[in-house]
Image (cartoon, rainbow over all chains, first blue to last red; front, side, top):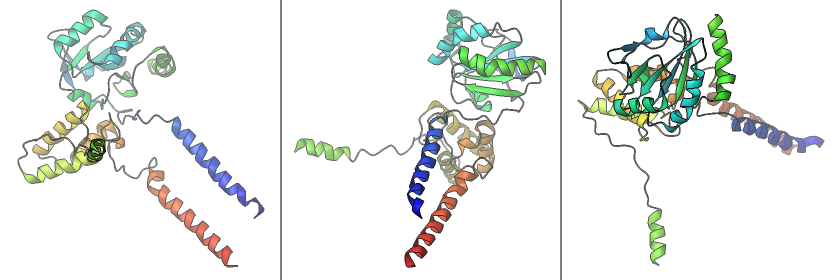
Length: 176
Length: 128
């Protein structure tokens, strides 16, 4: 065993590789079990259009992006200019879930920041959010024409995330 | 001396023993189920706490949900499934044995096995 000294070295390299891999994991991103499943059934009062009810059927027949936000969520405010910009993209309809907010605050927020959404479900108790497995705002769901959840992103969508994560998927979903 | 006394006191800063909700359970069994469930589910916002320990709004909501479902007569298993369907296996502190988690469950035994083999070889060699 002349090369016995190589064993600790090999162990060291193995551990170093393992740990350096660990550094690049994102444990805060929890893979949603809802990917590939139909949008949960829900029925919510529309925040901005009195008398209108938003349901899962609104998210069928076209590719849609459902963004979960709240007026108390500072990241949502930072994200909003991007969302407004991306909502001009022709093949996706933008919907949203207003999560655990108050009506007044949410409406004020929209007035100030603009409303890019076709419809906004007012989820005051956060129970629909629970059915969607929401655990932090903002969260965005990409939903195909049949109403199947195809992708979920937790955190702020900026130019890079939109270009890297959303656009390629949207292009696939639009043509399928 | 005074400083020493205060330093001494610092060691007795007991950490919180979970959140007191005082849900009015209809019977003791449901209360125990509540304690059991909230201690085995992970708070996804503050990932190293159970939902019993966390005061994050989501943990609060989930405790409320568990309370309501228990009162409606749902079993522990049904409520656990409710959580897993929405938040995935990650919400369980004891994840089930699947392709993704087998390393987690079997890894320590594999390491123990390898270490024992190494020890045996080492001892045998020493004897010679």
